[in-house]
Length: 263
Ligand code: SF4
Image (cartoon, rainbow, N blue to C red):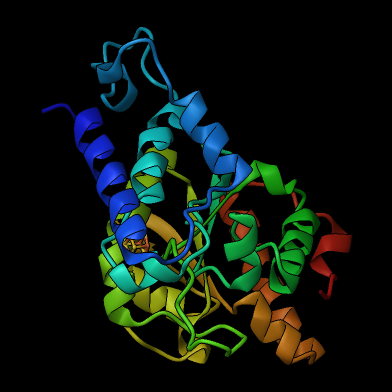
């Protein structure tokens, strides 16, 4: 059986389970539909099977991410999250980026829009990225978890993902990192670090120094939502100092204005 047929079986099974359960209607974001359409090829086998790496006509990073995105789109490894999500939130940005940001999980805004970091914390992350001298589309942004952690019916807000949920979803992020092959990873917040490295620590101990994730340099810093809760200039400056280390590691020029900057 080809990978395409396997994926199609999963889609059909999922839709039949949804219909039998009489629950939510399946929904897909515009970006998810566009990703699937972009992945359509003339032969079914071509859709989900990467061509042999001959060096000539090898698939681009975007082409290699497409089948991973397609598998995530119909994933039901966490049945409770598959049942509660509006849609999966795969990742966004440049598939060939030097710099990749990793958060913990989608929140309500991300679940609604199908893109990571689009709420208030996302706007602050975009500001950080732009102050570093990048456009948001220059970097790659993903979460450890691809589905919004479920909340009790009638309860608003977000909850952090459990370690079990993150470990279940982590293989997808590992595949994304393997395709993008960034020069530097930035993990945002202690929960993302726990999901990525399997270790729990305080941000005071973790941030501001270099770690390694499968030999890729990893900088750990505060999640933007922490800065929204804690408006202290000193805390904001810590994040910016972490980003200055990232710029140095990437060999990017740093202006005097950037060095003096406070978020
Ligand atoms: S969180 Fe990840 S592993 Fe769990 S259902 Fe969603 S995509 Fe699948």
